[in-house]
Amino acid sequence: MNTFLTQKLNILKKTPKSLVLTYVIIYFLWGLGMNRFGAEMEIARFTFWWQVITCYILYMVPISILLKDYKFFDQYAYGLVAMGILEFLGYWLKTSYVYPDNLLDQLFNPQNFSLGMALFFALYFPAGNWLVSKIHRLVFLKREDN
Image (tube, rainbow, N blue to C red; front, side, top):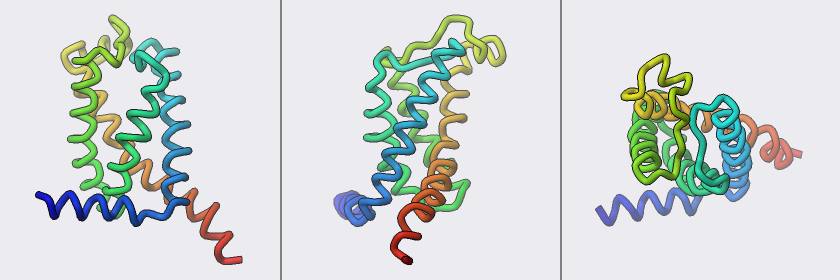
């Protein structure tokens, strides 16, 4: 177990700072946007806006970096575990607020709400890795070529 954790920490440490910065900016903006969307549509939102930092940057960015070299389905499967834990804890600890009788509750019923959220947000890992890769290559790697 120690070797496993050391290996994963080394992957995070060796990640280029420009790539980490790209993840942080994209995930922060994405998190703010999704939190706002959830509140505007009265589906769900964070209790405090700064939870975008803890969830999207401190939780999802490292996981995304660790998953970035995996195939789409593997990223999604591991992401589903990660998001299942996050969704469960968010609603259990009441750090996420679910609007009563929201659109998703009406569509899928309240018992399936957090499962649906985890299934949806697990797509963030392969989609986020794809987007970050494209933007990082466009912004940083073209500069290095010049």
